[in-house]
Picture 1 (cartoon, helix red, strand yellow):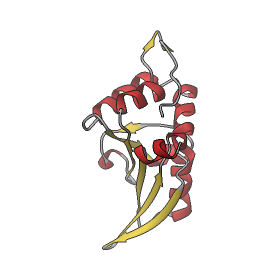
Picture 2: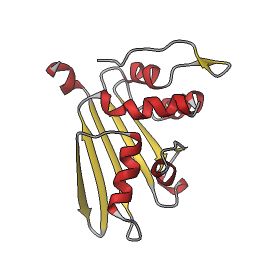
Picture 3: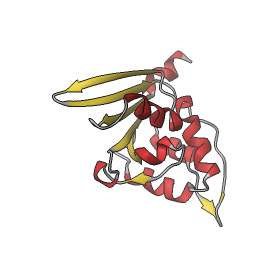
Length: 150
């Protein structure tokens, strides 16, 4: 199992705007992902929440919410657009929607008034991760359900 963990890296980043409460930004992030570690970094005058994990299990909430909200097709499209090579993808989520436990994909920070939550997934085969999180559907139902990739 240890070899698997080193091949996977999940990074979650969200700007904490001056008018925002750190705990609310943390809640928004934790409503959709469960990072193993969280820290706040100061870059100039900007504060960034950074969460990290070395296992896809930290995306289990995201996996569940996608099914509960029945947005697999939209999620799959957003994930495919975020693919960067064979082993990396980045998606952006609306921070205020995440705070309420909902998902709304955005294409950049500018589409979310308080900034987006950026999730970067590094895995040897990111297409397998997409198939696990958001499989293709027919009439709104998954064609298949995959196990969490190793």
